[in-house]
Image (cartoon, rainbow, N blue to C red):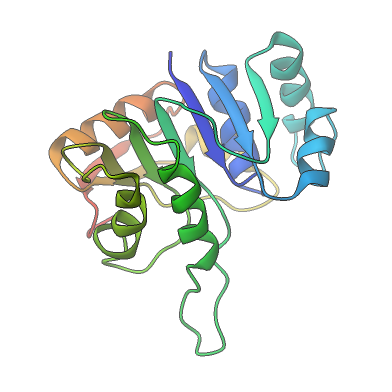
Length: 199
């Protein structure tokens, strides 16, 4: 069992947080939108995903899932914020980097950070690790870092999060193994372990 913060409670982050909480982890769902956080904390789900509302209420009532606007200390941080496309058609990493900096303020030695947000090749070892290293810890030695891109379509996400195959790429072997171990706790699909650049 891990203490996990899921940053971003949108169409990927909320179902992922709920499924982690349903499978024995203590999960805090974090979003910068206070009204969204309040709505989720009261069991209201804007997404029309089968089973999500029922599962959310179960983990809220069971105490496995809490919400807030800021990350707290945890063993694992999962970043699942949106990556809009800029005017030049390139990914805008503003939300992702802001989430990384918020995580950096709570990062402790030995923690694991997983990025599920869509990011361009090279970003994990570039802008992402740089933002996280504002914690004073070095990626790889101070904390583990992996990229596990979301592979789901709205409308059936709760099922797909569990059953779809996943690619997991860490910045080193230890990061990959640790991330894969976490996903095995709730994913029944195949986990393909690789490196961050390939993922």
